Length: 210
Image (cartoon, rainbow, N blue to C red; front, side, top):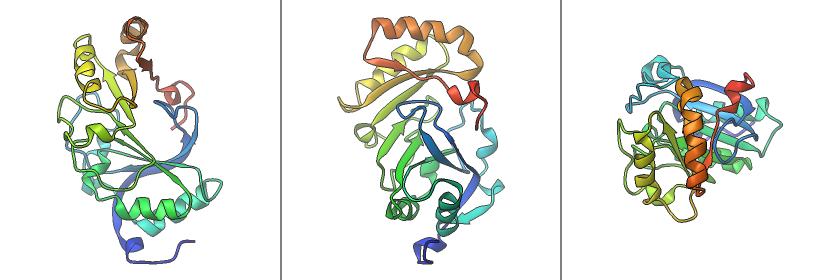
C-alpha cells in the first residue's frame, strides 16, 4: 500500500479502471492497466464512450486509492498504466503520475491535446480531433500520432498534423469503428502509398476485452 501523502488525497473522477490488453497504437498487445477519467469537452460525434463526458457523473478516487487499486489488480509494481478518458488532460495529472512512477509503473496517456499537458509520461499518444484542436505546444512532445479516419478527407487532415509532430513520432491511422468495414481497405491502400504511416486496429473489440 502507498503511504498517505498530500498527493494521495488529491481526487479524480474515474469512470472505470481495469487490467487488460492495450488494443491499439504503438503499444498494441501489451498488458496494461487502464484508468479512464471522467470529463470531456471535445465532443466527437462518433465517440464510443460518451458516458465519460460528464465529469460529475463519475465517483472520485484519490490518487492513493487509484495506485493501490492498480497494485492490487495487476501483477504488482512495474508494468504499463494508460491514462485515458474522456479527455484526461482536463485534470492535473502531476500527482497521479508521480505516485505511479514511484512504484515503477510506465505511464502512458491517450489525449486529444486540447488542454495543457500535466503529468510525467513515458509515452504520449496524441489523437487530435477536428472538434477541438490540440494546443500547438503539445504537438512536438507526442511520441505517437494516432488519427481516426472517418472519411476520405481525413487523410489530408492527418498529413497536416504529421508535418507538425517531431520526426521521431510514430504515425498511425485507425478506422473509426462503426465504419471500419468500409474505411479499412482505404487505409491499407493509403499506407501502401505512404509507408511512413502504420495501421492501428482496435483489436480489443475483435477479441472482446475491455
